[in-house]
Each structure stands twice: as C-alpha cells, then as structure tokens.
Length: 142
Ligand code: ZN
Image (cartoon, rainbow, N blue to C red; front, side):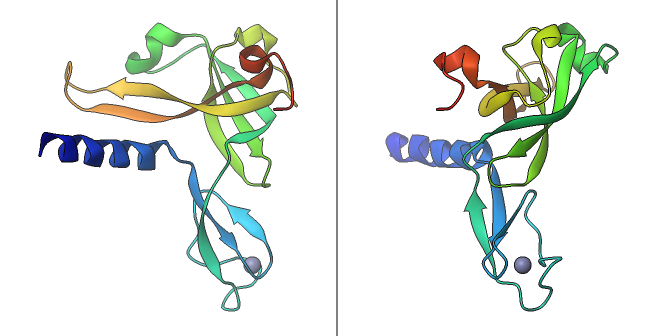
C-alpha cells in the first residue's frame, strides 16, 4: 500500500501547486483568490472553480532589499503584481532573473519553489513564484 500513499501525497502537492481561483460564468470574470460572490453579478453570478494557466505579464514590481530573517539569503529579490492572461492579478516573487533586468510588461510564467522551511527540516511550505518566459524557452510567447 506504500504506492497508494505516495500517490496521495502527489495529489496533495499538485493541489498546492495549482493556481486555483474561480470564474463567474455569468460575466466571464476570473478571480484569484477565489471569491464567494461575484462583485459584478451578486446573486446572479455562477461561480465555478478555475485553474489558471500561470502565464501573464508583470504589471508592477518592487525590489526588496530589506527582508525578514527567513528571506535574507535571497536578498535582493523582486515581488511583482502579475496580470494573468485571464485578467486576474496575483502578487508573487519573481525568480531566475537579475532584479535589475525585471521590467513592467515582462512575460512571466508560474513555477513552484520552496518558500520557507520551519524548524530545520520540519514543515516545508511550497508556493508559486514566477519566472521570465524568455529565459526559460528562448521565446517570449509560448
Ligand atoms: Zn459575474
């Protein structure tokens, strides 16, 4: 039954990796994080789960040069508001790029990285980060 246990762990990890939001089927608006009520349609809104593709452009960004203890090793790092292709905006760290090379409008895609680790080998928290598409694929529009 060991294999079944492994499969369950992977299913859980995939759920964490997905950028899970929702969409209002009435007005076709995407939300992240998911909303309970569509602000446009209120009670007429029909919300359904939606998994974002993880592609978008940098809308705004900031270079963090002062960070809490857990993040000091990574300084300086970039935190950006990414406008996903579906229209929702998400705040995330931008990785695999020199902070000086980050620009507004840069094409990025979600990747998944360990964010922090508690108590030396205890709980490890994973989350989405974004990286430039150009750097990975050599092509700006995959
Ligand atoms: Zn709606």
